[in-house]
Figure (spheres, rainbow, N blue to C red):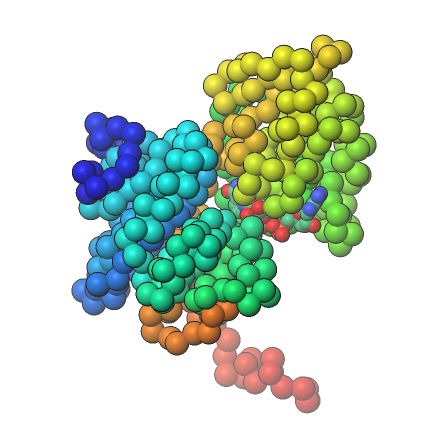
Length: 416
Ligand SMILES: NC(=O)c1ccc[n+]([C@@H]2O[C@H](COP(=O)([O-])OP(=O)(O)OC[C@H]3O[C@@H](n4cnc5c(N)ncnc54)[C@H](O)[C@@H]3O)[C@@H](O)[C@H]2O)c1
């Protein structure tokens, strides 16, 4: 598929394929699903368009979909998260790839359009850009689309807004909202990979530093938990009084960003909202503050405000941009304010994405077997439970089973 693909450098294919093989050996659930369905070829004669962060785990999922019979085209879901070697490795193994690291906004759009040229029957999206394009400039494709699935919180927000506006034109499975997704991927995956990205990029110590985590949702909980484990003093900022109370009970300080801005050494935004850190916050930050974002879009830390306040801007180190303010204070922004764990790291660990991507493929198979309305659908509990059971199996763990008497006791109300 190399000749059909839009990739940076085909010569990187061997290096990328090795990365894909490394994770393939650790994605036990996906491998079980492959074993179960490969003979059946349930995706035969189906075209699958994927827009996801294009690193090794995603590549292996795309490859697995191909092994189940699909014709697959894939692009990155962020201009900075594609790994060019992985893209080349995947293209060399039968998947059409349109993506490269450092795509301009125009190239990013072009890559999504090229993926859509496959005329999909099925879609996997991450953040909603692919689905948005189908509903705006590529409406001609809608008739053929059976449905799709969405990977992340921000994408689900956009899909629900489309559903509310009654414009969603095919069913979408909310993979992000499955228990085996957000309890593991958003919490433990983001928790570990965000710190991996920050530490490998800055090479700075976390212990003893004030770490400000904006947003105490599933991702924020993971980022705060791991910051604490690294010895950081964690401050949480929130807009939701329940989440803020939860953060306090979990042992973290809670305060508005305007206060936190004065004391933070590291700032991590993970809210899905915009302008969480902006002008008034930069004005009071300490010299040397390090800023990173882990939310889906690069709008959580206001880059326009930072640029306007800065008298000097330069690259301090790979993936670190220095902004010097008029009074000499220096503020450092990692990975252009894009998801730090993917733009400056390898993303979530393989064993975590194994669960998320098992949900993705299972959701596609479910869509093919069931007639569904043009709405955002929950992943059925049977799929969630199957993924959890396969996870336990891969860990060599077992759980107890309820006896008939216990089941009756739990479902009854008259206790003798
Ligand atoms: N980096 C990654 O790999 C990764 C993984 C999963 C999800 N995400 C993205 O991370 C973001 C958060 O996802 P989540 O699953 O934690 O969502 P969530 O809805 O569980 O949590 C978001 C939290 O942010 C809070 N919030 C909203 N606006 C705020 C503001 N202005 N200031 C402070 N807090 C605010 C909300 O009250 C909520 O508690 C989304 O954009 C999602 O798509 C990133």
